[in-house]
Amino acid sequence: MTEESERRPETPAEENGSAAVFAVLGKQLKLVRERAGLNQREFGQLVGYGPDQISAMERGVRTPRPEFLRRADEILGANGMFIAVIPEVEEAMTRARTRHPEWYRSYADLEAVSVELHFYANQGVPGLLQTEDYARAVFSRRRPLLDEDTIEKRVADRLARQQVLEQWPLPMCSYVLEEVVLHRPIGGTKVHKDQLRRLLRIGSMRNVEIQVMPSAQTEHPNMDGPFNLLTPSKRAQVAYVEVQGYPRLITDPEEVRKIADRYGIMRAMALTPTESVALIEKLLGER
Image (tube, rainbow, N blue to C red; front, top):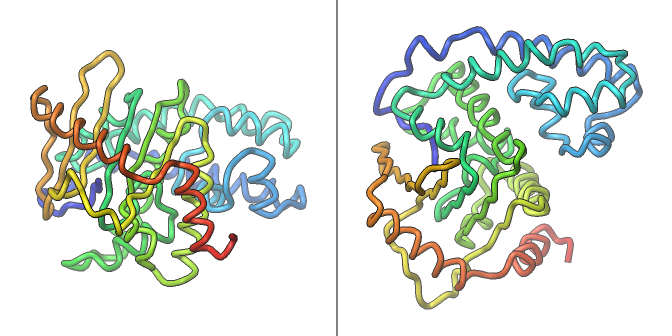
């Protein structure tokens, strides 16, 4: 689901100064990487990140996690420069948890501590899977139109959320995407292809499974729209839905059970993760 509703204004709590820390650190990372003679793709391969993620960190719109900073310090020969700032980064990450709109914060807090995350999407790629350019294209075309500063802030917030997929212990994540999501070229051909490649990268993570629901499927247990299912650590599973900017966090056990039941049926009807990868590769012309 998305956090882009305009139903309520953002609050001053979101302006906490953490962005400045990440911006300065990103500039330092770029400088040291270039001095080491590595481009973003080469450096990303060494640390286990995609070039879009490296780019986002260097521009301060994605938070570099402590384990990444330790690895980067070693690979780039930074002599402890990145390790030294880990305490400040951890403090800034704590402050950054308040950056989402107030109405969305309850969901974001649960998402950040979930041990299981399951998503069904039928219109666009879910936020945790989006590339930076795809996210920007989504926000840029939103109606009513958003101003440029708001767009950039929403993109930064979205990229920051994506770290939940990499935190330790790794949460178990699954996605069921309608096939139309793979065909809709949001942002144009290049953005679309980069997004498909990111799906392949994220889908290869050992804690993530991505499945595609074929458009030719003649039966479907859920015609009510997209949803998220979260299981926060040591808490009961909850569901989240959002329709035309009206969010709803569902905690009633019976309602959650019904949505989880639909999701289980959809996973059984969708292509397997391996078949889904083959379909994405075919769309990219790699098969």
